Image 1 (cartoon, rainbow over the protein chains, first blue to last red):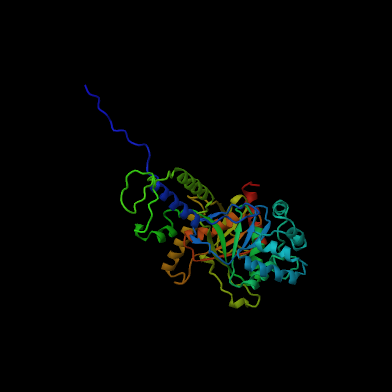
Image 2 (image 1 turned 135 degrees about the vertical axis):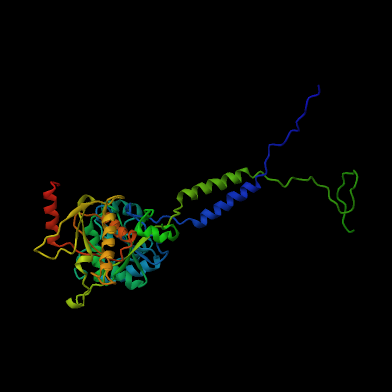
Length: 219
Length: 197
């Protein structure tokens, strides 16, 4: 009986198509990626059903960690530069140009004015170490108080860019009195509208918000 | 034409102007390139933060020292539930605003939960206000109102959860108010009555 001969096929596959797909995906991820900004503390935000996304630009963020320490940051480096220049004049901090530049490119700050100069003079790794033990920005319930340094930060930042949106990113376990101080400070500057950063959770079925979201489902 | 034939190897000629050369395959092995591509994809997938953080917009009532007492808006006691946020995520609530010293409000305790929690209290209150409106006891513009008073031991999470309940239950009128010493006494009294620390 004659053997049936299978034609021997080459094991080579054309990789071009796969390569195309790979690079298409790669391009997508590269464009969609926005690297997480460096944060001095990890904060777990509470969840809410609110679906308003955080605006892209012009954000002033007040971060509160579980221990109630307050960190302050502005997203735009240009605004940060103006901010630190104003702050230097206003509070007579005597910062050098290099220290100002360190602030402009840096992340959030959580030190009182008295320590700001030495904090900015340190290199980034030392700053990270320092953030772990930092005391946070001192606040008080009234804006007139000399101790309320957060009020000074907010005022100067708003002078640098009046369009800044104020967001509070606080940890779920932060105590209410700490939040209260921030809110009173904002109210002291006549800011009554601000955003709280929250995670997303599903709308519980059978509630008013659920009916609003799914108008057709109502029985 | 004017070209010179440089192929001196003798042999046969294919024709004028046709150079003889070894035909190389144009195919390249793309496998390493694909490998690299996928490696980078994996890297970007891990580092990407796809979901943008969500925010909750909050409007505090306009506060000004110059507003006179009579210009401030008053709420009708029958539309109000006062909610006190306390430690260990406990919620105390009572009907009305608790301003009548002769009749101290009856505090009830509840928690944030799916069933029989604060949500049902709010839903029932909304229903009650609607009924009162139907009976004519309240004007058509009156709405169920929640007054939130977080005390010093409550956390930010409690506040956000409470504000979230407002949007979940579509409560239009609510306010975050400082807790009064009287309210704190209510809490302590209730705690003692129920033997909780």
